[in-house]
Amino acid sequence: MNPYTITEKGKDISLQNGLNEQLCSDELVSIDRKELNETIRLQQGMIFKFKGVNGHFIHTLCDGELVYRLGLTPSHVVGKQLIDFLPEQITKRKLVFYERAWSGEDHVTYEEELNGIHYFTALRPVKRNGEVIEVIGSCMDITDRKNIEKALLESETKYRLIAENMTDLIILFDSQGKCIYASPSHETVLGYPPEYFLSQNTLHLIHPNDSSLIINGFEEVNKTKTPLRVEFRLLHAERGWKLFDCTASPVLDEDDEVKHIMVVAKDITEKRRAEEFLWKSEKLSLVGELAAGVAHEIRNPLTSIKGFIQLFQQGVRNEEYFDVVLSEFNRIEDIIKEFLSLAKPQEIQLHSVSIPSLLKEIYTLMKPEAYLKNVEIIIDSDRSIPLVRCDANQIKQVLLNLCKNSIEATDAYKKGVLKISAHLEDQNQLCIQVMDNGIGISEERLKRLGEPFYSNKEKGTGLGLMLCFRIIKEHRGTITFESIENQGTTVKIRLPV
Ligand SMILES: Nc1ncnc2c1ncn2[C@@H]1O[C@H](COP(=O)(O)OP(=O)(O)OP(=O)(O)O)[C@@H](O)[C@H]1O
Ligand SMILES: [Mg+2]
Image (cartoon, rainbow, N blue to C red):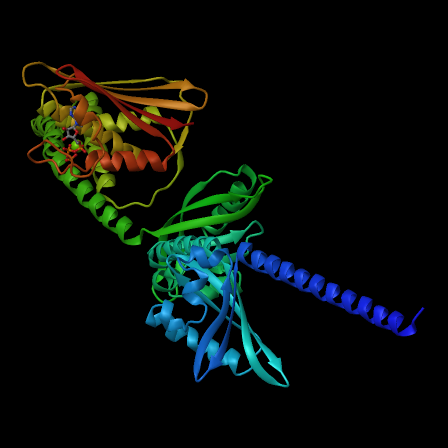
């Protein structure tokens, strides 16, 4: 074999092989490139490249699904500067980041929005011999995340706005009673910054007479997992005790256990003061209205006493007359005593009260008024009624207001009858009824009873029933009205025994 040929041939073959390999790898490269381009195009984000040319940043590559979602195509970007395809505002912002990456900073990132799409971009400079030759940017669509963030922010802002601008106190405790949030209103309402409540136990701010109510209330909410409403006093930093109407609600976790207790408290100091003022003036007007009747009632025994004294002057002496005179004096004393007790201001005081005696006192007080208006009063109380814990003066006030309404409601054309009765409904409940045969109350007026200043009387203030509702509520009782127009009204007061 000719070695040359062989060599030549061999050379030839190897040349041929080399060529084949070259072709093969070119093809592979082209397939690879095609595949790479396809991959870049199909990926959900966006990849781009740029380089600095004569002081401008020119994009040399841009593809990916995100490009199209942004309302662009690669041809809008490749070979172009930012200003060629983006609004000036965005261009300005982006150039800052482009400059930083081009100057070699390694991890430049930014978020941007275009046509309603939010995206996140990371820029990476590619260096050769320590010099940046191009920058690769990769982008990711973050619209969904942004929308969630925005919704969260909006709802948080809304709630923060409510919490921070409310004049009520909002305070959150964990189930152990440690405060974890106090609204800014604590500062304006109580004079202490919210942090004061976070950093220490503030039980000392609760009025000593109310602290057990609060501690027990907290335990009750924890145990029963139901909201609780209480009134209690808190010490203002400078202005003494303030009265709050507060609702404590349990916040349950996934396992239905109390995780937090949220308390919303409203300062009702001024409101209560105004009510008390009204109450006092209402009381005084009641006293004023009853005065005429009382004076009249006192005149009767006085007339008979005068008569007896005149008899004594004439020398008539009969031991029995002394008894009559004494009992007339007692009667005057009773009337005056009851009358005065009405006008005296009193704190609510619970005592064991005999309801039959209370009704008797009502009779003494109302009889003169009833007599003047030609109304008959009938008292009917069950002897078996046990003592009831209540504030006798306040319950008396309620019954007087009701009796007064009944007498005022009597129809001029028939004799008025006012019946006050009391009986046990069951072992735990006493029912006191005030029944009249007056003009009655229409259905639509019935619904509004108890609203302040709701009166159809020329001289009425419309406060009587409001006070009745309040007193009965304070006694944890109920008050209901039944009425038929032109036939009469029955008021039922139910009190726990
Ligand atoms: N027994 C009743 N029969 C008919 N109407 C009644 C009766 N009780 C209450 N009302 C109606 O309810 C209204 C409100 O009563 P309320 O006692 O609150 O105020 P008032 O009697 O008008 O004024 P005051 O403040 O002097 O008591 C009355 O104006 C009256 O129209
Ligand atoms: Mg009234």
